[in-house]
Length: 114
Length: 114
Image (cartoon, rainbow over all chains, first blue to last red; front, side):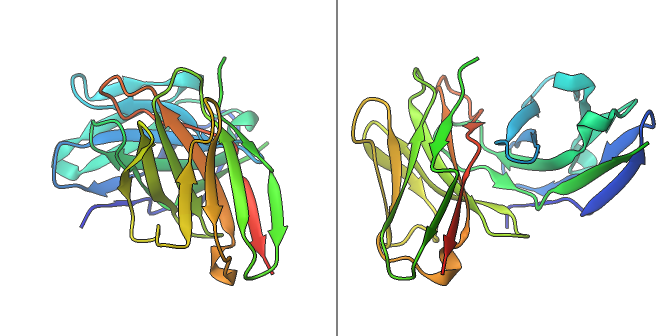
């Protein structure tokens, strides 16, 4: 079955510390992977995406993610977290074809402490 | 920057009533989607729409649901007779259809069924 697992429901990180949010997927075909962020009252904003090529992808707001096929993972990282990064983060997978469904994980809530 | 908009932001209705959730996708996009997120659960795909037809739908999207593009800008989701379990955040999304599945999401409509 196709699925996305985000093992961490809630993470708290100190401002300035590094961050890694985990994402594992189960997908039969070549996956097209996404990370979205949702701030309170906002929609889902695309942080970055991966389909092929360099397995380390850069996104907006200083985020990056690394695709590891052998581990079926697509973890999100940021070297130094800012208080404004506090939000909910969703990993998603889907085919590289318009009009098709994305499969989302349950999300990880990030809190940033000062 | 163009964005997907949704109205209303919050809708409260009585069980058994019909509701229509409205979305204005990004203007040059060709594919439109509805997803929902029940509180504490995953974002789930409902339906995708292209060229005035449903492209794909999930098991959730039963006869109670319908979608329509009534004019050149709006995309609506109708729930004919709401149930308590329809209470959720409903997200609209759109994509440009240039062979990629990058979906841009709106801020969501929170539907509460009493």
